[in-house]
Length: 175
Image (tube, rainbow, N blue to C red):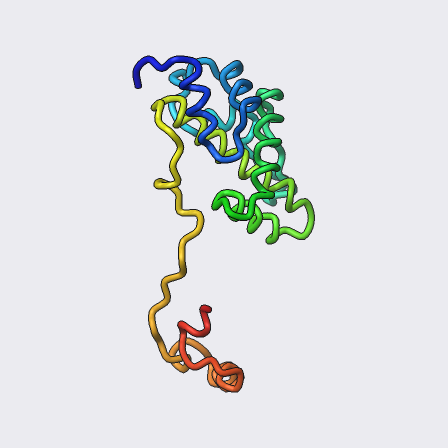
């Protein structure tokens, strides 16, 4: 994207949610040139944020973190953990939704997923030298539900139960 001074690049990297000066400096020291990666998947693999499956007899037995750059991986996990505490940030809300779906190890899985998104965002900001924006993300979309009578989408017994609760159509059901 051209030449950018070090202080400008550091400020640009800190526009990514959850990234502070320590994470940005760790990113710069470990990645150095973002153009050596062809895509975001390579960056997440280099950072150790690319999950792989452990498969035995055709069944998934566990998820294993691939080897990657340990210092960068730790910095991204700390950034992700801090981001999960922010209630106003869409990426943090997305991560908390992941954590809520898993009874065991939900926070760890959410940190890994958010760290992967942070790594990809840092790579884009570093490569293009532009501030971070949520424009390309679809993390917090509102539900779009067509107005449909309940009788067309549910069995009659379920319709009776929902009508007794005051729910008359698909929009009320979605809410």
